[in-house]
Image (cartoon, rainbow, N blue to C red; front, side, top):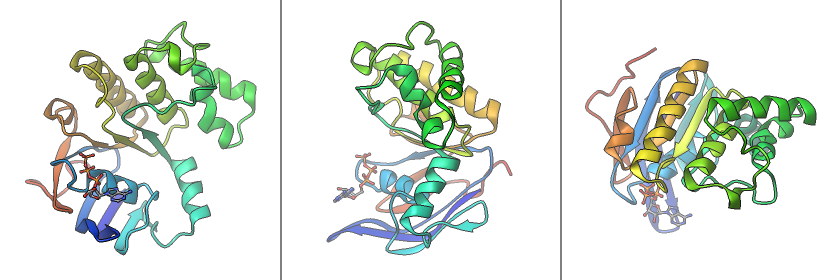
Length: 225
Ligand SMILES: Nc1ncnc2c1ncn2[C@@H]1O[C@H](COP(=O)(O)OP(=O)(O)OP(=O)(O)O)[C@@H](O)[C@H]1O
C-alpha cells in the first residue's frame, strides 16, 4: 500500500534519513520506533507526502508520490490520508465537532452533512456531550480523541499518527490506542504510528526500528497483504 525506497533527506547539514526502506501492507498497523532524533517523524512526513525526499522514492497504492507537485500531494493528503499528532493540534477557535468536520468540509462536503457525520464519532469515541466545547475546555485525553475522530472522519486509506499518546498518561494513552486500533480495523485503514513507547507499539501488527536514518526490523516483510 505504501512504500519508501532508499529515501534520503537532510535538513541543511543534518542528515535525517540515510537510505530508508519500508513497506506497509494494506490494512496493516505498523509501529515505527527508535531513539530520539533517529528520523521517525521525518520518515512519516515523507510517506505522507508532507516532505519530499532528496533522493529515493515514495509509492502509495501503485502511484509515485515524491514526484507529484505540491498541489497533487496536498490533494492526496486531503483525500486519502488522515493525521493525528502528539498535541492534537485542534483549531482553538472551532468547537470540537467543527474540528472533526474540518476534513469533510475541506473535501467539499456540505456543512450540515459534515457536522452530522462528525457528530457520529462522538458516541463512538466516548465523547458524548462534548461537541460544542472548544479545545481549551477539553482534557488532554478528550482533545486527543477529538483529534483521532478528525483523523478518521474522512475514512482515510492510511492514518499517520506521530506520538498520538505522547502527551497523555498511560491509562488515557491506552484508551486512545484502543479506539485508534479498533476504529482503524473496523474501516480497514492502514496505520503508521510513530512512538517511543513499547506499550503503544504492542497494539501494532509489526514494528520497525529507525536508527541513524535507516529502517531496521526483525521481520522485514509485512505480515498482512
Ligand atoms: N525542520 C527541521 N529542521 C532542521 N532539522 C530537523 C528538522 N526536523 C528534524 N530535524 C533533524 O533531523 C533529525 C531527525 O529528526 P526526526 O524528528 O525525524 O527524529 P525522530 O526520530 O522523530 O525524533 P523524536 O523521537 O525526538 O521526535 C534530527 O537530527 C533532527 O534534529
